[in-house]
Image (cartoon, helix red, strand yellow):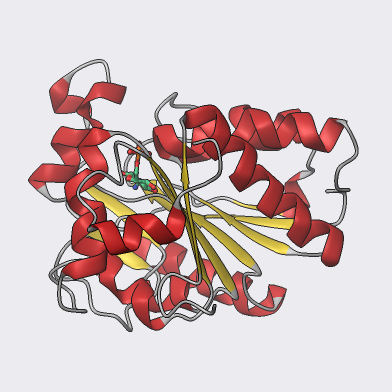
Length: 260
Ligand code: GLP
């Protein structure tokens, strides 16, 4: 049966299973298209997936020597050497262990003197690369994707954004001090993300349950940016039981994995 949204839904037992599944999807894309363009989110969810991806790359499940990778977002004001800079996180957590060379990777410079131009540089690089084949996305507790906070239009492109209080609070746990969370970021826009040929959204944990339910139930619109995924046409959603716990039975029944 073809689903209206999402086109595939997997409700798995836990984080390891989610990482296994998401990394399998990335490998499948790269096997199909060795020069695939991959979009990667950062944050806790994504960094749980990366070790599985690195393991599979080392096992030869896919050859990543020709892929190109794009980061979804970046804090403004953090140098690339800062431990909380997404570029640093990606370099340490994925790109270095995978042995990718700098030419394969697009990273935002959070210290760019003109962040607006930095955002446009990303759009140009995406266009030159032929667009994203697979975008791995996480979900913010307020329904954001990337750093597209509530209020973000569906046709928004890569740009400078102010972070909401909710997002700054949610990300406070990654920083040494509350005041250290930057107030602004560069993010691919909703329209930029929707241009990806496939989107894999992974949301795990009870703290994501409300946002997951809203992604399915809220009217499609800027109030809940993740609802825009419902208009895409090739979205795979990977949830654990906790993140799926506020979904109606009808949705749950369709996504249950055997043994989960
Ligand atoms: C963060 C990042 C996103 C990420 C999402 C979920 O703030 N801007 O790229 O996908 O929100 O993050 P986490 O997996 O840490 O919950």
